[in-house]
Image: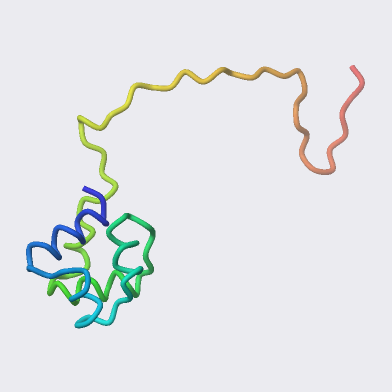
Length: 97
């Protein structure tokens, strides 16, 4: 589950509307909508969300970004680009062999 989905689920579990989060918790309506949509949020906002829901911040983000067995994707076989040119270290000179 993504952070935005988790925030939305917690809000609904607590019987809160987005408007209630705005009125009672000091968020802006677009901020709440963006959080739930999955837009990036600041650490300060993350801490405030955890405080509003009465949970530790680590519980709010626990498990995010973990790859589970069902989420493994097949490897992508990207074409390999071959070149005869080697990049030299800055300041190095190429020999004329």
